[in-house]
Image (cartoon, rainbow, N blue to C red; front, side):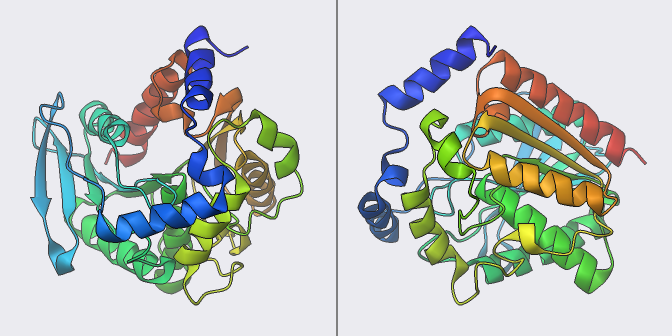
Length: 299
């Protein structure tokens, strides 16, 4: 049974029509048009506890680095934020990443990547690979991660790192990842009535724009279809009241068949990206993530 707070959050998502641009394809197209003229703000909130934050602009992208206050991180996490490839990073992301930096005693590199309609998966995944390699060279032990749309970017980048550079991150963190951007899993319709946040019609609109010239089954677009042999370790969080959960289950099965070291935290009746939410389940997940990365990246 979900906590009272988790049930309240789910109810608020429904009451505020958080899924408005997902249930209606026309509204999704309107959101893309809006972002063309009014991009979202991406700056972190001030005075996040236990960390310092700096901003650089290598090759034109804003890239934030979050450091623990002691200034001596034991490794680095390169993180891709979610937002359906069209929405900017939000305060819940910043709070999670600051907690990770402070509690895991690591650096967190946060690229502000170009969103739809300005960015596509191929160019963003390629740049994430380069940023990971740069961060690894600077900080040593390195992890990659992301939530939702960012989970797609992170896993696609990890596949590229393995196939093109024979490198696998010390840890791959996936929070409610988007894995098959065709949204073709036959189990999605059974989950849809329980999901207060995501839906297929708008998701397809965003995914079509994000894939650019690549087919849906290209691993740079849908990492579910990559060769996962040799990846790992991977830690994945997914709630059963999330239409992305059926694909998370498929990925978990394929990873185990490929011999990948997988830790799969499946939140019963939890919604999309529940580790970012102000609930007991979210708090427990955040503590787990920070502890995991501290152990994984300790030299």
